[in-house]
Image (cartoon, rainbow, N blue to C red; front, side, top):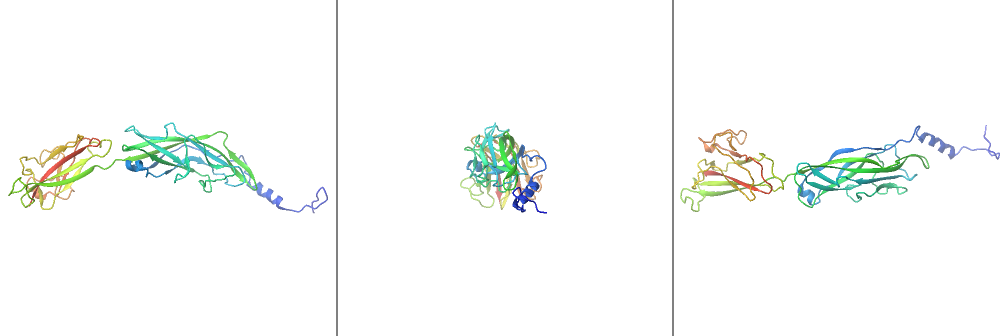
Length: 349
């Protein structure tokens, strides 16, 4: 039986009926789902040498920003908005608890930093009909990221740096639509997430320079000695600390291979000094010390190996030529910017 309109016209099934049916399936059965804002981290933004941060070569690191909206629809049917305002009680700085030094950082909405996020200023990921204008969200608002880059105009002390910033999120997002947005989720006040981040600054390696000079030969003695069989030489290892902080105590070790045609000269280098180990402080002084008692003393800072460094208990008193390596372990801290030298004599055969 056909249905008749008030004017007596037959009603024909059409698009309107279909659209209503679609809308009925699209609408949620309960209240619109809400977006979530949660604290995140601590998240590492990387490990860098100081020079990388100083030269601006540190990359923008991706970290979770705390905003997630599983039920939002990115459509052109509504006036969707999503914005964030960044603040920091710490002044957007990462601080090392060990050295009390700090490093600044900047925020951006993309890894290339073409869309920087200015502290205290509302930044729009979406704004009304300019839906996802910046292309920053892709096709969803799931787990929106933010990007962080450290920077410094001066050298940074090695250590672990920590900090946090706050992101105040505001949104109005469509959650159901047919030919118009018929359901949405909206923040009534800004909702804030705290984002915690960490960064590690690596210490520069201690510099090592090794030099060798001939100190005595059996023909010229100490006057312009030559490196001939039977002569003696002294090899000097100079350590330098390029960092702005001291090297941790008792962490240095230098392993020196025995040179070709050489043997440790336990009786000295042929000069007036018969010392096996000599040390020299640089400027500024390092405060390091190398203790040497005797070739067989296992408690001093100089050890000998006859097997390529596998074991360090060899006593070279009887057979000096059997020594393959000498290990020197200075004890104490090494002051910032300091240098220290230790030297050992060898006999050529």
